Length: 83
Length: 83
Image (cartoon, rainbow over all chains, first blue to last red; front, top):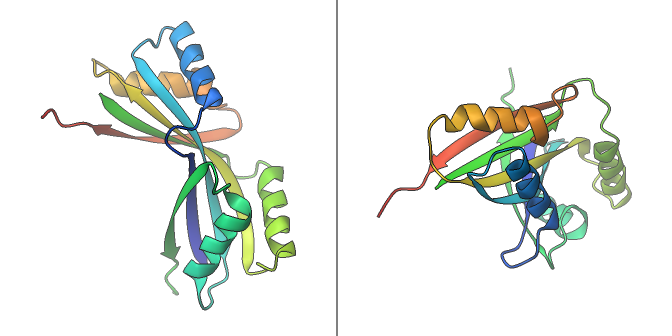
């Protein structure tokens, strides 16, 4: 099994109303030191090991997980050691 | 400024319908090697440096960012070097 962590964020310049709402709510609670907030997604996939895992993860991101028009994604792979 | 990355996930045992939906959609697209999917949130906060930053970040997580009943959170702090 491979653990894949996918991090998805809005591209630079894309309005992030959810982040703005969180920032305003934090300010209303007294956390005025918080200047900006960006909200993204974080997915953890457990994948059966096979050929071309990285290529296939990139395809999954492009096709379903992220919206490449407005979002960036990065991912990390973590192979579980066989015991 | 301090960059804080907050990672929020559902606790072990809490049903993750969003993750299940993503897993089924990936399988329908032919990515049958994906066994389980967990969906979490990832927040990036830019915070003005001050005392007790870590304590305050934990309070923000408990009060607003995460739901401590069903969610776990972790965070990392990253201080920007003054030039």
